Image (cartoon, rainbow, N blue to C red; front, side):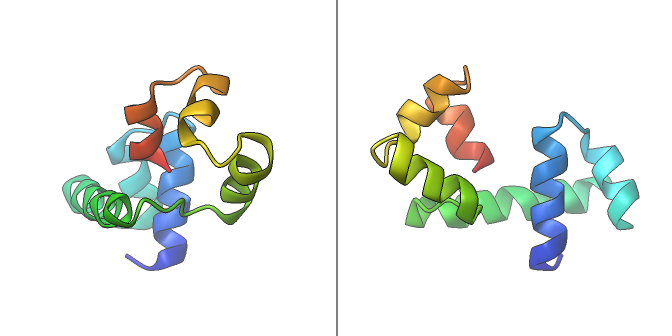
Length: 85
């Protein structure tokens, strides 16, 4: 998947779409999308970076750089937030 496709897939997951819905939109099979996304998440978690620049800026400015604070403001667990962003 391209970076743009991956970003769209992350966005769709945030909107509650299933792997099947995302795969259909992008023209892949659901398992390939799921595997690619999980691989991307694992690679990002190693670097502990946020893939969305606007969200990273918001966290830096409004949450003292804390993803945990951001997760609380979104009513999500920290582990779920790390998996998404």
